[in-house]
Image (cartoon, rainbow, N blue to C red; front, side, top):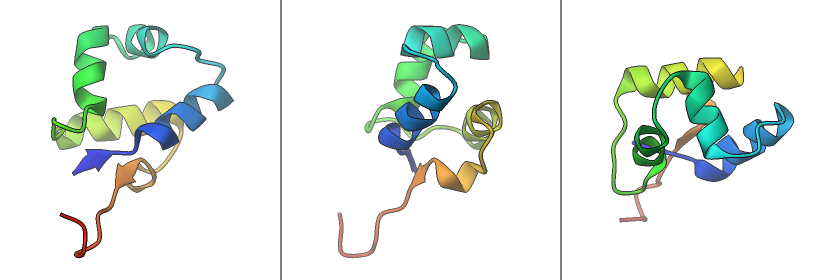
Length: 72
């Protein structure tokens, strides 16, 4: 499971959150933790995905990147 960074950035813009540091502060986590959650090399835990989605006001499924079977 990966988080769609582009969707998160789009939602951040709608909430007028300009930086990941600002978003991390609002979530009560460090910028490094947020960077890890959004990293392609990191599989975020379900509770982090839910918390991020709830904060951004969307369903968690909206920020999850779905790979189809042909992509590896």
